[in-house]
Image (cartoon, rainbow over the protein chains, first blue to last red):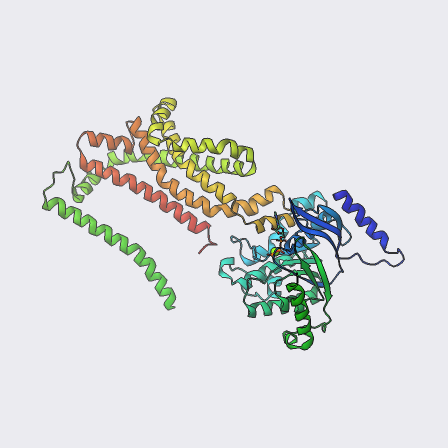
Length: 279
Length: 256
Ligand SMILES: Nc1ncnc2c1ncn2[C@@H]1O[C@H](COP(=O)(O)OP(=O)(O)OP(=O)(O)O)[C@@H](O)[C@H]1O
Ligand SMILES: [Mg+2]
């Protein structure tokens, strides 16, 4: 499989004429499939995500959204097809810390304070980095500065259980940013939060996206959230998991919460609702 | 401020209420023994027991120290080996599947049945008592520690994989820390049971130690001494339990 990935990644490079050195896409899937035994979780996915894009993924429960993120992040292998992350294999991208993952449950380590949790990625994979003879990428911002960046100044030494769900998720985001990822994979990161907190964190995430230039792939169940954040919404369908449609969202670059009351926004929302309803 | 005062008061009450209840029970016992004129060899009054504590202090201490040493050694050996075997179990399915049933089987043998065998094997000295005390600590620690080492959530393990963590990094940064609260629940059980193990060992074959003193006092109808010995041994359990609890408070700061 790995060999195939590599050869396809190279072949992908041949597609672009050598005269114009286009940057490789952040994510490229070529008819990638994932099977869990008899279950076809993902069936022949073709997807290209450009460097710096903000993509949201919508779809019915069980259609393979999490599996797609886990495929990209080298947690599950493809059972067929090929893929590349910034022109490399997923494994190489993982070893180089090209991407970071944010889970729905913040997945903080309860025995570490907020700032110690943010520091975790710098303490793990050291052996691997040494073996490869390279240093782990590190954000120019210190863990403390990253916590301030996500609005948690003064709570650096709090234990996770002392933080609200939204605060825990912000720590998880700061932790994801510590290795300066080029790709941020987020699986329903705000799914368990109340609407006000979610709105606030959405704006903060847009701010992070703008300031860092990171590519974001964001899975959600909320149609308004998907439209508000995305440049493109990827609508999936289930059984087998596949991409139904990709809808570019043509809203002003600077997103505001009030946009949700505009006719254009609601047209997108209605379109997506219809797609989601009609299986 | 009011909140702080309240928590202070509740910790005060937490200590005061059981102490008051204990004092009341002792007073009731003293009163009952005097009122019904119960013979001393059947149930000595607390005041008599206290007198024995003073008069027989040297004798009690001479027997206390061996039991203390056996308990501490048994606790250390039993819990340490359980932790090491738990680590082996979570790293190797073969070890787990091969040896866990054996551990369960050994645990089902009553300690009173196995104690004479161990005394025969290891002789009447210190070793047999330490082994019995260790054995009694072993199983609860093993079970808890295996559970603790397996307690990290799937997300934590996926995070470790995304960070390309090595086996030792996963063990030291994730598995071991997440097992600590489980380990302490086991250590609390072991802190009290190790004393029982040492005393059982002394019953089977010893002429010194709190277990031996209990038998001696019983056969000589020295009930006040028997009661004093019982209090001393439960005092030892309580002290060890408290030590483990304090260590937990000091080390496990992340839980409320
Ligand atoms: N580890 C696994 N083993 C077996 N089947 C799995 C595994 N992970 C996912 N699946 C199956 O793959 C399909 C897609 O699951 P996935 O978790 O990707 O869905 P999802 O779109 O993220 O759903 P949700 O919106 O509920 O989170 C489901 O049918 C699921 O049962
Ligand atoms: Mg999911």
